[in-house]
Amino acid sequence: MCMATKTISITESAYRRLLALKGANESFSIVIEKITEGSALSNIQGILSGSQATQLQKVINQNNKKDNTMRNAKLKGICQKLR
Image (tube, rainbow, N blue to C red):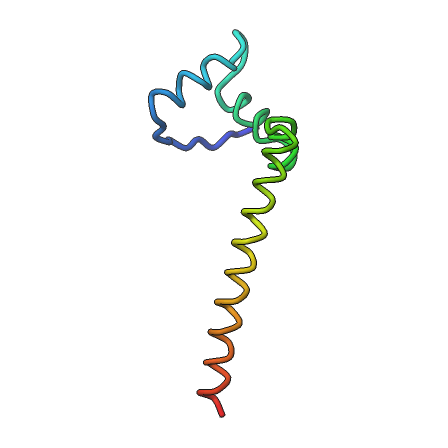
């Protein structure tokens, strides 16, 4: 199997974190594949307490509401210009 390679820049702290996760016979590619496997949400499941998750969901909902309001206002303006 021919493997393409890419060079990336990461911070020293990110490198140390990857290095700590890397097994003796593992490449950094394997470590990155492991930690990015599955959905993003499954990788962070259990990190927040119930109350923290509830608060985060409230903030997300508020931001979504603001985004929807702004988007609707923009669409309304565009529609008025097209008339």
